[in-house]
Amino acid sequence: MHITRRVTSALGMIALSWAFAAPMASAQGPTYPPTGPTTTQVEGTKVTQVPATPSSELPFTGAAIAAYTVTGAGLLTAGTVLSLAVRRRRSRSST
Image (tube, rainbow, N blue to C red; front, side):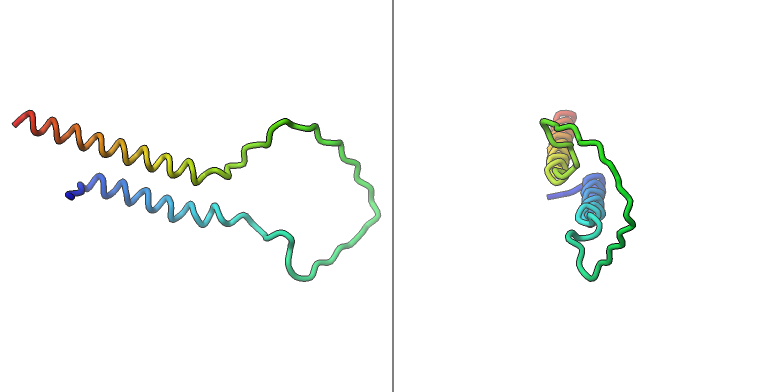
């Protein structure tokens, strides 16, 4: 299959975005529970907190990024395939 320069560059950009996004998505910060020795210093101050209002749904945190990435890649692939099919059909009809 002959792959054009545009398709190759688009696939390269997708691969680079996945290569950079995957480590950032998995790096959530320090592990919980913390490992190693921990020290706690009690100063004797009292903090009052206002109770949180209950919500019927959880906030969106971006955890479903893999599904969005796969969907986006699939749509890009479908668009590329359709674009190439139209170009081939136009080149055949003009000759």
